[in-house]
Amino acid sequence: MRNGALYRWAGGALVAIDYCDPGEYRVEAMDSFLVTQGRTFARELHESRFSDAARQRCTELDGFATLGVESFWDAALALVPATGNWFPRLELQSKDGAAHLLFRHRPAPELARSAVLATHDRPDPRKTPGIKGPDVDALLSARTSARLRGADDAVILTKDGFLVDGTTSALAWWRGDILCAPPIAEDAPEFERVDSVTARSLFAMAAALGVETHRERATPADLDGAEVWALGALHGIRIVTSWIDGPTLAEKPGRLGLWRKRREALLKPKGAATT
Image 1 (tube, rainbow, N blue to C red):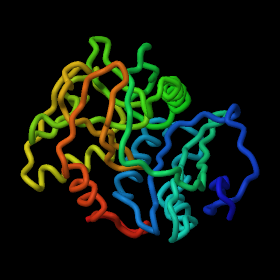
Image 2: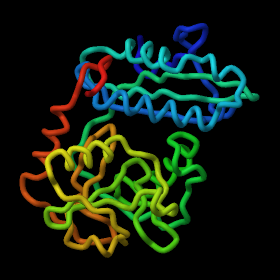
Image 3: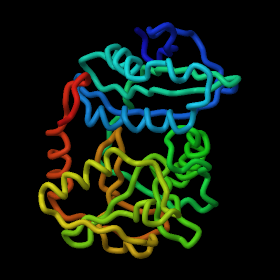
């Protein structure tokens, strides 16, 4: 199996294909996560998020009900080697009213411990902010613009200037020893965003450890002097070392390393569920 190989789910099996013209298909849902040395983090949460999004987007598509999403995930993960770092992507696509499942076998890019952010200075590029997949091209375009400014990711704001999400990462920050993040969409619809598995897991760990948490509306300027984290399935938890034309940030020594170790302790074999 070559790196970057593509597979289409057909007849209950993954079939290698040479090429997939992105112009012919619409991405309805997708999910990616790191598999390192045969282990991954919260695989069942990624699968559940994908399945829920796919069902929400595509229940009316021809053949969706019989696709076998769970079997597709099992088959895809079985193809990921037990050594090395990999970043597989699983997609639900549509074409001419029919549903298709696609697996992209990809090596992981270089992993990072830190990140630089920049505020996205244009309107929110998302059309379906609560689902991972349909907005992928628009979000990657926004991130590319941020990278031209020297940043790793762009931060999306509400119309009133409050932080919502990064284009490829969720955001959290510390007020002293209080872990904070934007409001959830159920309480404030203008903060709708993809349900980050890493962010959800971080707050679950905080609750289990008795760490106080808080949801707040915050502008970039409100984070001056705070410790800010960028959260995602690829890099896990990264410290934001700088914010271009934004707030001056801080870091409490040892805190990032401790929480990264806590997350690493929850890695499971790629075929196993987290309990």
